[in-house]
Image (tube, rainbow, N blue to C red; front, side, top):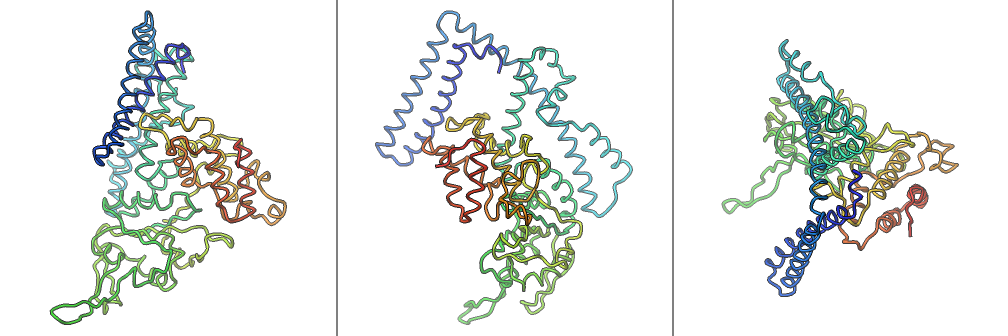
Length: 493
């Protein structure tokens, strides 16, 4: 923040402005709800919020009309405008760079879809588009600012810090939008998407393997939409699903006073005929009878035909847009009950299109900042302006992100610096990680923080994390998770 932000007038004006925004949102929501119900109590509650809003606006107006205060605010606003212009300029440079890389990706994907090599002109165009690789880390924001029109105005340390903070807020708002669309675009995710898309557009199968809660399904859904532009069929491997439910079966129906047997295609055949991708979620939990059939199906490409034995051998034409994306959890003796190791024959059908999806910050040391978990944590709870709710502060969100990172590293067996602090003696001997069944995975971290943010102050982060640990069935896992969380300063009840 800039030094003038410490001015009591500015602090008071800032607090009032934020409170006005919060009450305005609450008043709008209450008014909409009251109109829907028509209840007197709801109408009264909406009216009270409107009165609160009017009182806050009056307080802000009175503050600004006091002698000298308006000049202080105008000076601060001018300074803030300078900082924001510089941050916007840098952000535009980042987005322009990303647009160039996306154009290069589309050229490569189009050629791959047509199973052809790039032309000489296309190769040169791709080379030009990929040339100026601009880093997107906060530490290198000055690189993004270099050469911009507003660089000359960022001539003090305070202005530079404020510009970096403003640029970080813009990135955070983008991350918030990505997360609400289903997938946070980390460097790992972007890399997998860029490599897998050309294969999917040709109808080749893709396999995503990783630990629980690492966004494999979300990544598969994103890839499916990017590759075909249509909603995929999602088939979950858990439960009592049968091969007939996936492929299709005969059903008895009444027609013209008679009972006839009609073949009803399952989601796999529907996707083939309609040219849509299929996601086989947790494929290694699917029945063995279907996995044997899958060996043949994974070899199909658009334009091929499949004889359906459940339908007297009648053929289905594989339409353009069909492809299979499979997700699989790691196969270990102690985790993921009900799954089997995928056969080498089946895995070989995916060829070079198998990707291991790691937890965020997979290559980060224990003594480094887990930036991806941190971005995920903040993106999960900030509002559209990039502001944290009053129920959470930045320090505890960062500590939760770090605790999640440590648990993920321990769970996945990444023996980095500090690993031994979270492994009991007997498990250190046999090499097993210190968490057998439970982890503060990315999706769990998001759920915990959103519970606190949405509780209107009724639930603290300490309490929510306590609930998470208490719900873990494995006693040793509870001990290790408590050790990790308490090591980050959380007080578990």
